[in-house]
Image 1 (cartoon, rainbow, N blue to C red):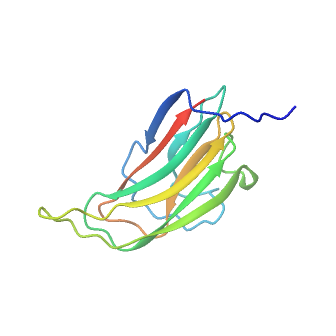
Image 2: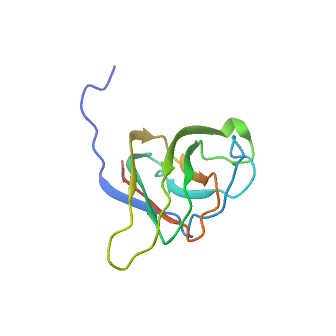
Length: 138
């Protein structure tokens, strides 16, 4: 029988990369190079991801951020990963008098239990980015 009732997160879930996202990775299947884990769904009930945010930590050249979905297994097997989306990150210059530009990408989908979201960059970022995911746990 189909579920006709809306589903809501039981608790908010905000996760982020434990290190500055800065190293380039030009592979197109996530199997090698530097990858950054930014979200892991609840291991029992899964999770919901609302959006991902990229905040420059200083002066960076323009690059592209690639957002990957992984099925919870190892990333060095190409069939465990899918390139979900890409977003251009503009060059940034640090300033003490004006805010740096924030780039935000809406996601708005549920993740099965233990699925993960990874991020890679096309070009090395000098200062790097703080990458966070806003979501919820079921």
